[in-house]
Image (cartoon, rainbow, N blue to C red):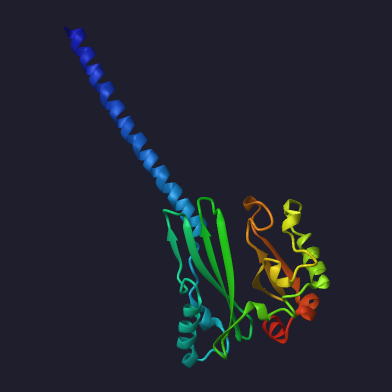
Length: 234
C-alpha cells in the first residue's frame, strides 16, 4: 500500500516536471523566433537620418529656404524621406544624407532592401542644388554619357580590378568598352575627392559577394565630367 502511494506520488512529480519542461521549451522557441525578428530588423533597420539635422549642419542654408527644401526633397523621394521596416517581407526602406563642405549640394541616398537575407537591394542617389532648390539629374554628370568612351571604360575596369571580390565578377556582366556609360549599371554616390560608383549586389556577381563600390579620384575623372558634374563633385 505504502509502495503504491509512493509510486503514485512519483508519477505525479514526473508529470509536473514534464509539463514545466514543455512550457520552458515553448518559451525558448518563442524567444528564438523573436530574436530572429530582432536580429533581422537590426540588420536592415538602420534609422533614417534626419533631414532637418543635416540641413542644420550645412553652411549657407538660410532659414527661409529650409522649409522649402525639406518639402521639395521629401516630395522628390520615392518614399518621402521616411524609413520603415516590414517584418512580414523583411523589407527595409531608409534614407541617408551627405553634402559637400560648402553646402551647395546635398546628396540623398535612398535604400530599399527586401527578402529574407536581403535577397534584393536597390540604391538610388538624388543630388539637390540647395541654392536653386532643384534636383540635378544623374545623367547630367558625364560628358556624352549615352556614347561609348574607351578611356572611361579603362579607368572603371582599373579600379574595379582592385576590389577584393573582382575574381567573382561575371565577365559577361562587366562594363564593356563598346557600351555607352549609361549602360554600365552603376549608381552614383558622393565621395570625398572623387566620384563613387556602386553596383547593386547581384548585378555583377552572386548576391553573397555583396555590392561593388569604387571611387574614381577627381583628378582622373574630371575630364569625363560635364560642367555641372565638375561643379557638383569638385
